[in-house]
Amino acid sequence: MITKTIFTKEFDSNYKKLTQKNRPFKEKVKKKIKKIVEDPEIGVPKRYNLKGVRGVHINPFVITYVVIGDAIVFITINHHDFVYGETSTIYARLMDRCPQLWSKTPTKGGK
Image 1 (tube, helix red, strand yellow):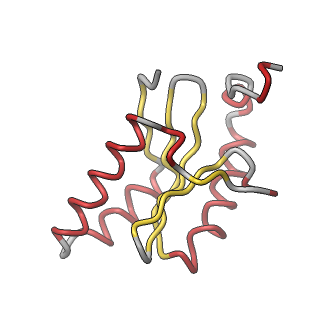
Image 2: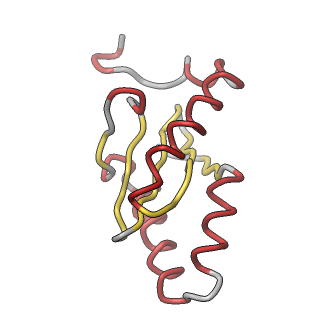
């Protein structure tokens, strides 16, 4: 069960830029975040250097996030053309700066 929701500074910054003059989009994003918190597995799992990250589309934008223990870390929101490169950079930085978090990430088969 998710008990914590964390937003990176990049998510917050992009969210503000994308929604500041677009109220209908802001409401869509809020609803999607709520759905993600209720059921974190709705996002599509990513592969390769983004293994562990999930993405949810609000066309043409994507929200990327990772579940760590009982928390969801919302990595970023951006246009599909840019989001995965940005996510890769942020995700790598999070892994380097906070390695203790990744020991809490559940793995397949409970191993």
